[in-house]
Amino acid sequence: MSPAAQVPGAGGVVFDDAGRVLVLTLARGERVFPKGHLEAGETPLEAAVREVEEETGVKAWCDDPTEFTTSYVNPSGVPRRVTWFVMRCSGQTPQVTESGLTAARFHPVDEALGLLTHAADRDLLRQVVAAREARR
Image (cartoon, rainbow, N blue to C red; front, side, top):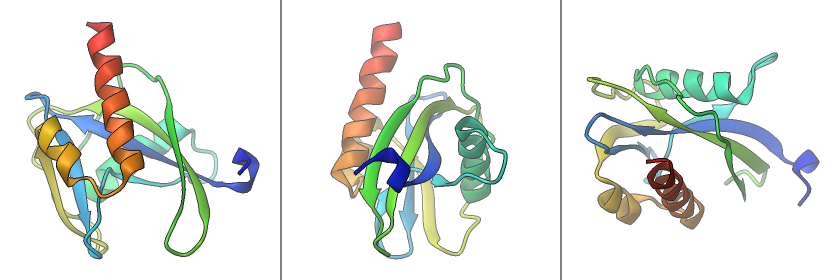
């Protein structure tokens, strides 16, 4: 599917000071990373930062704007292409702030890999972790 036929979105793979990653639980039971649609005039990075805060109350930032992407078809049959950014936060406890969510928690990476519902999200987390380790 061509990127032009996909609805764009943006999200964050957010790590806390302990190196744990933020995972959301949707009302329908899926476990995912925070993400959403771009608003008019927003860059993908701006949208990702906004979505993380809107969904979890976490004020995260991005030190390295390297982009990762995933593509999928959502439950409504809409093809999506999400641009992801690695983010950090410090000393914050996530809070569920949207009705479609039931939980927002930080998990160790290995635990998160077992929790994430979609293979694309697990692959994304592995790519992000590898990229972080390569920069050290």
